[in-house]
Length: 478
Image 1 (tube, rainbow, N blue to C red):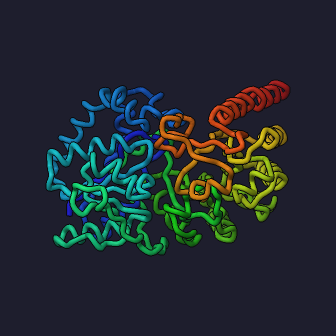
Image 2: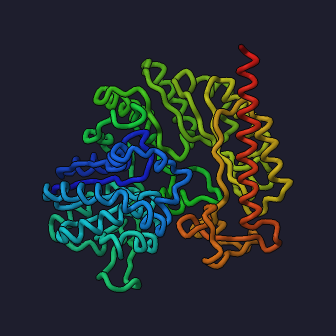
Image 3: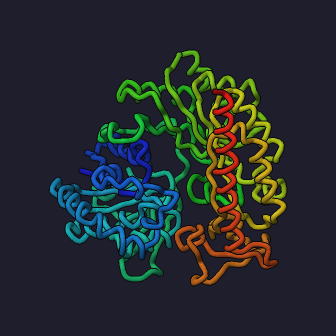
């Protein structure tokens, strides 16, 4: 089949979309003709309005009323024009990569394509496809999708296109969401997911259709692993995205790195892993191979705090040119860390962050404010941790806890002493319909105003204390 893969705004323009490149490679390996289009980066350069790609403030993309009233009128001309260009190439099927921040533009484009060319098969995958309800609300009723792929997409996408090509039914195909007819919500079907794949067998991601000079960094995404070894109560990682943790072999990773270096002349790789150190031994062996082969790259990404990350281990991965790490700290309070099932402590966080910094690796951390049970005392514990580690941290990302109904907390609110709010009480503090449910503690210790104020406070702390401290040190060194 002749297939187009589309990536719509808004998303980071740091590097070409890895998910699209993975599906392109898989479909090409099965004999399909595939062309990939990044309309996200294309629109970024067309509009010359970089503030619209500030995804920390993405309501213009993620709130339907705001998107349709304010943003769509400004981008509709370009999307309509590009759809016309696309359809002149007579594709048999068109696939989309869906994230929360590009859901409405994706639905708009897919709906337009279906109206103009109803015989073209439309399919979609990505993190926005987690339940039948989400796929229905965003993409089926308005977007005209024929099927949505759930979870790992390579194997399912290949089988989906094979069946379409052979005019076979897809009703019993594992790993998809579809509507048996397009009239009633009650006939929405989500088939069981495909079994977890051996990711060592996958072809290397295909970035050949992307102009890498259009992106903000000459870098490529890569996956060392899929899934997560943790089981945090606020996360859907193991519930919907990756049922279990699997790693590529160190040898396969090095082979992929060398392949992409030779093909695209890149030296920076951005692992898209939920955590790169889910298997410490694999990460250590990978570092040994990179050092042994004198592979001249820079890399880094998400890791979890782990006592196994000793000073010697950290020095080794630094020698292998791991130059930055993002730790999901979330809280500095031991009781909150326990309630989150993080499996780490306040003191372990400080030790690993300090050792990482002293190994010469740049440290960034993520913080979640307002988790159920967070008292003012526990919130202050987080501020104290930040103050203690201020010399070692380069960047802090902070957000307020949003109650996702698909997480352990969302499914067991009574265990956390909380109750959900009526829809009219939802707010944009990651408690809107796209982010989760509005909620408050039954005891009254936490509500949206308290959480909002704590988020403001922690961001003010970051700006005034941490940045001022670093600036003073620079001045003192002059």
